[in-house]
Image (cartoon, rainbow, N blue to C red; front, side, top):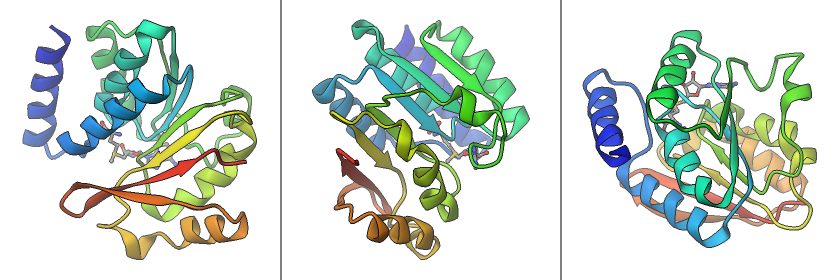
Length: 186
Ligand SMILES: C[S@@+](CC[C@H](N)C(=O)[O-])C[C@H]1O[C@@H](n2cnc3c(N)ncnc32)[C@H](O)[C@@H]1O
């Protein structure tokens, strides 16, 4: 039933040209979530909630929780509806710009062990600055979507990685839509 809902939501996003993760990125997300079994997950860029539902439904069986941020209010409202229709009760969705909102700092979860970043590419480094202190010190993994297609916009990301001496891996997803993986960022 959930699969059917996600199939319909993907088709509706494609028809309306709403950006969402590729089917290949979805598979990578699911595989990593099954392997790493995170409990405290964070997403930046929910759009209408497709990837949020994928993450939350995968971690639900281990009592995992997802906190997700979407800055565009109409997308946030639709995400709320979709999350409710998918009966994902382990999601907290905020209509905030994660870099700007004064309140964001109070609602960002502590000890995040999984982060999915899929928002404005030119701000990827700023997002990492913002969440750095909220990562679990024992075990964390950060996935950043679309790092090849938009590589010319990723200056802030590479500056952050260099400044903090963080190693990264880039894995192929759909053509031009590769995913960067950061492991155990301190
Ligand atoms: C590529 S879409 C996300 C797709 C979604 N992850 C999915 O696969 O279903 C990027 C979203 O990030 C949101 N966004 C951009 N900058 C943001 C920010 N600073 N804080 C929160 N959301 C942001 C945009 O409004 C847009 O809806």
